[in-house]
Amino acid sequence: MRVPRCAMALAALWLAGATVAAAGDGGVFQRPEHPERLVRADGRPAVLCGAGDPEDFLYRGRRMPDGTRQGDQEAIIRRLAAHGGNCLYLQVVRSHGGDGRPDHNPFVGSNPARGLSEPILAQWERWFQMMDRLGVSALLFLYDDSARIWSTGDAVGEPERAFVEALARRFRHVPNLVWIVGEEAEEAMTPRRCQALAALLRTADRPGRVIGNHHWSGTDFPSWVPGGDLSLLAMQCNVPPAQAHARALEARRRAGGRYAVLYAENTELERATTDDARRFLWGSAMAGVWPLLYGIDVVSTPPATLRLLGVLRRFFEEAALASPEPADDLAFSAAVWALRDARRGWVACADGAEGPLGLRNLPPGVYRLRWVDAASGRTATERRSWTDAGDRLLVRPAGIGPACAVWLRRE
Image 1 (cartoon, helix red, strand yellow):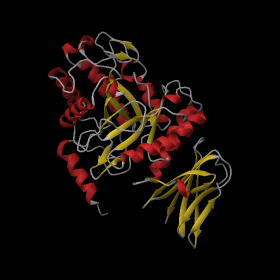
Image 2 (spheres, rainbow, N blue to C red):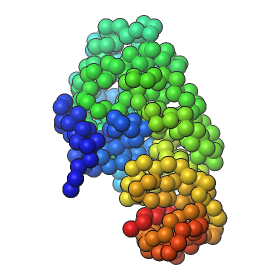
Image 3 (cartoon, rainbow, N blue to C red):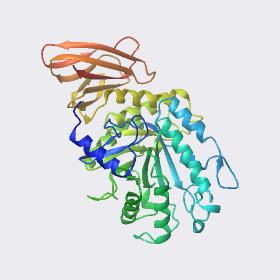
Image 4 (cartoon, helix red, strand yellow):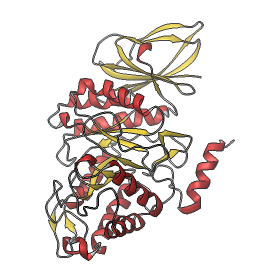
């Protein structure tokens, strides 16, 4: 099989300084020529759909004398993976002004002056390795919102430099991490400080690691600069679920192909119904932005809600859309959202309406259709053929409910 030149270039980059992640693990990268696309080490699109919580994952449970925890972390990982979710949102420093307790940091005796605690880091590594075995990525924040240990303005002082570099080197070999500098970074850091921290992570960590930042609610990326080390907006946009699609589209337009966007947090989902959660997840994904579901701790989250994560992830992994472009103008009848991929076909999605799903201007040919019920996960496959171009009404198969999606690929 012919290997694309971009794939060979990526392989050379990653092999230069790190072991390439195996297919199916949690490793996430970006194509140098297409930074807006998240991919796996083998070039497949990386579909991230998981829990935008629990932020205190690393500090849950009873603290032991050496700083390690007896908590439910392994249960969270197993339950998320069992239902098909593949990403967790967690934070390193939650003390010193953050939302956590004074011992929510990885230092010896919780004192930054004493340096990083090896027992704590070793326990984290075991959790990260377990996540990797089960295909779960960690969206790993250096700092919680307002957390600030060192007040050094735009610059990064030597104690903080040593902390960041040691942390990055300690987990350099772990493939399934995506670094995020700070949650609601404006609360404690200037854009220049965020860029300086990202540069430290870039230098100390493995080649190809994705590094991003998180800001106050909105669709812009104020700490991004051309040629800098921040290449992912972990977006917070707090809007009702019905507005998630429009905001994700707006964020994607603002990115303009210069960086990737992940819908990492939406606090309007804290007490969301299962329908609200589904609407948010599919609304974001159908804008070409992968979503994380806020307000769930996984261990007590109803199975029906967790199942939504796996349903969406498996559907889009099978579709393997390399360059999906939102195309809502193609959707009609019960379909409200559409995506188009130059090589992999079309996706149409209905958000609860009865009737057939409509797609405009389909070319003639033989098509494979893959349907999914967005609530139950039930699937169906069929083939259709058309001899001329035109608008098509796609009648859903038996068992596919009003909230559904269909992927069409011309054979």
